[in-house]
Image (cartoon, rainbow, N blue to C red; front, side, top):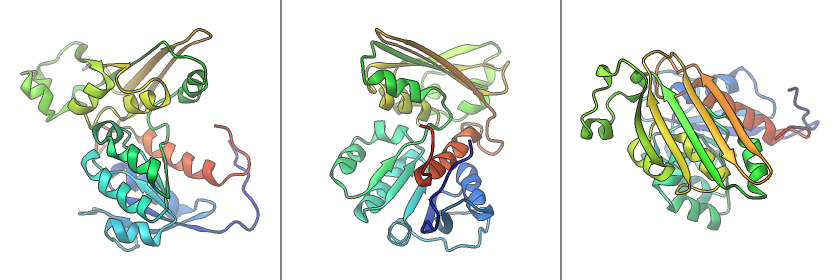
Length: 268
């Protein structure tokens, strides 16, 4: 949609924490021009691209920027959250799985001066889920299917002696709660964590993870039920060419979140 922005709006400085495949897409969008924003700095331990802005630590990023975009491995997220909320700033956080793995993030958010916004990421239908959650959700499930390359070097699969290279037909490699899925597949289940946050929580939301050598997309299907509605939604995303565990749609959802945040007229 075409967003409507207020006239003479102040320009906000944006910092990108993690300027890899997803963060790079957002960084380039800012450099190409995004109404109401300008790229101020990045924070990346080994950036592969020179974006023409300073590369600083988390604390400096949080202090100097108005909005910080997170595109990090889950393990690095708590330190960033602490820095951003400590400065009373806004964090747009795409790694929703970190909220499962590190419960202290939600505690920091409830106590802090700042704000955390979680975009829809690589998932569709979250707007309907949040609507149903204002009534009652009785069941929630997500089925994620990716090519086997998206699960390379996964410790849980190695422990279970599942060799991804041996998978020749669609195979379910995990079934359990979102809480369990996040522990075993932290790089693959941001979408499941987002669904759980929008709905009935990490322990009540079920997740199935499939490796399918016959597909070329990262697909996510949700089935959410309540007394008044049954929501079924499926999205098929092109894997990021650099990091097949992620979908480029996740980066575009961050850009959309930035636009919605500034617009006087938008659709949630």
